[in-house]
Image (cartoon, rainbow, N blue to C red; front, top):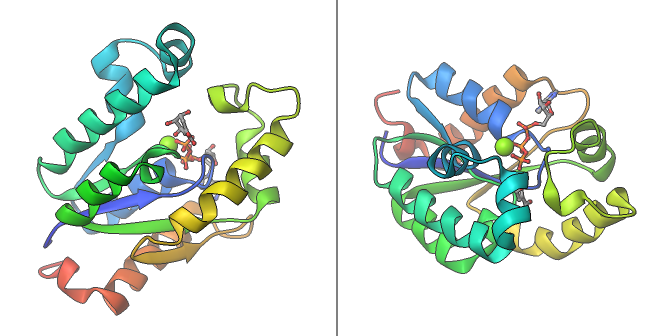
Length: 178
Ligand SMILES: Nc1ncnc2c1ncn2[C@@H]1O[C@H](COP(=O)(O)OP(=O)(O)OP(=O)(O)O)[C@@H](O)[C@H]1O
Ligand SMILES: O=C(O)C1=C[C@@H](O)[C@@H](O)[C@H](O)C1
Ligand SMILES: [Mg+2]
C-alpha cells in the first residue's frame, strides 16, 4: 500500500464496520480513531464530551489522528466530525486518501437511533439534528478523494468490496502489491 486509507463521513454511515472489513479483505491493519481516543483517555466519548466538552474532544481527535496516520499503513476509520476540521483534512491528504462513505438520512437514522453513544444527538429532536448536521457537513465531505454510497440494502461486506473497487479504479497506485 502506498498510504493510509481513511474513511470519513457521517456518524452511523458505517466507517467503523466497513473500515474493519476493508482492512480484513486487504490484509492490512485497522484503526478506529474514536476507539483510540477512548483508549487514551480511559473514558467513553460521551464521558469526554460531558466532562471536558466538544472543543477538548476535537483537540484530542487531531492529536490521535496524527499519531495513527504516522503509524503502519492500513485502514483508518475517523469519527464523523474529524474531516470537518481543516487541519485534519491536511493530515489525511498528506498521508494517503480520504474515502467519503455516504448514505441517505433514513439509512443513517436507522443506524444511529438504537444507541445513545453519539453526544451530538442528545437533543430534543435528534433526527432533525442529524439532518442539520448532514446539511452543514456534506459540502465538506464532498472534498474527499473518492465517494462511495451505501444504503439499507448494502451489507458491510458488499460496501467494503465497493470501496476497494473504487480505489482500484481511481487510485490504483494506492493498492500496489494488494
Ligand atoms: N453497510 C451496512 N449494512 C448494515 N449495517 C451497517 C452497515 N454499516 C454499518 N452498519 C451498522 O450500523 C451501525 C453504525 O455503524 P458504524 O458504527 O460502523 O458507523 P460509524 O460511521 O463508524 O459511526 P461513528 O461516526 O459514530 O463512529 C452499526 O451497528 C453497524 O453494524
Ligand atoms: O459526527 C461527530 O461529530 C461525531 C461522531 C462520532 O464518530 C464521534 O467522534 C463523536 O460522537 C462525534
Ligand atoms: Mg465509528
